[in-house]
Length: 378
Image (cartoon, rainbow, N blue to C red; front, side, top):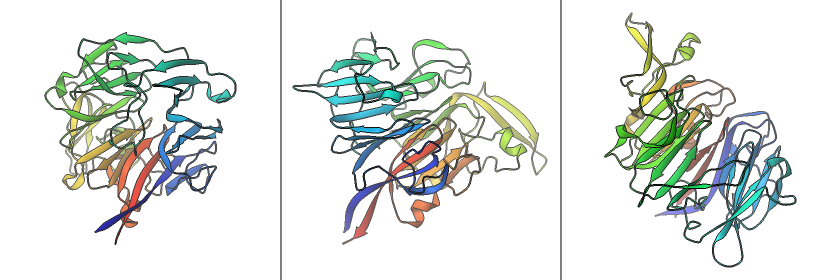
């Protein structure tokens, strides 16, 4: 039988500010390396990365920051890092918890920018879906919290509506409800809302193209979106400028880099498509914007389990524990030992070669973090 050993986080990509990426801590980490932390041997359960700093949360509730924001604090249950704001869910005496917003430049010194009490129901356990046992920042059953440097405000959703997961892109928001339906709103100029237009939406709007297909996860990139169905299917939409949708893109073709690969997602009506001659003389479709969800097949018929998006790259964990990445690769954030950008899913061979099943992935804007658990025969 297999014996499960303690898990390890790996990092690769941009670390120009000394973020907790690989042990080499150079400006770019092109191949996965064990996560570097200020204190050796800590058991990290969650990683959240912004552009210039990274937040690592341990199972004991200690938060470690590295990069342009540094320091450590205890009593944390979850953390969410952005360039303008660090949001913490912290324990408090009695029931419930406290949600705090900090300015990263003065984080954990003095008083937070704002704080808000969270009832115990909203601060409950997150599911096992890819967060390595972390607790989730609260989504109140009857409201959606808006994260900004100002104190959060809540707005009621429809009666009976229960939010399950909220993902923030650069200009848009994805919300997954308890029934597996996906809603989106915000800026839509790159098709990232998935409603078939490039218009903005001021209110949460159901993705009609996915109705009847229960989703298990959603992920928002800078200007693209990904979701994983309960049956392991993968859907993508939005901006494809760097191949982050795994659909053919003109920029990579003109650079002489791979186009298309084994991805079989086809553009839907309304996609921006441009044609150029392929090797066989037939036109090659180039997709800059995909405003409808497109079904994307992973190589070898693999089923998706978890997904995460960086600014312009995408990472997916399969149900068999393999990691596929694609999109912008300038800083090594794809983990393929180089800085090549790809517009097709490519397996990260490092984890396969090391026989390390991948259990979770989380992307920063220009980097990627992966959680693995080594298994050995007893």
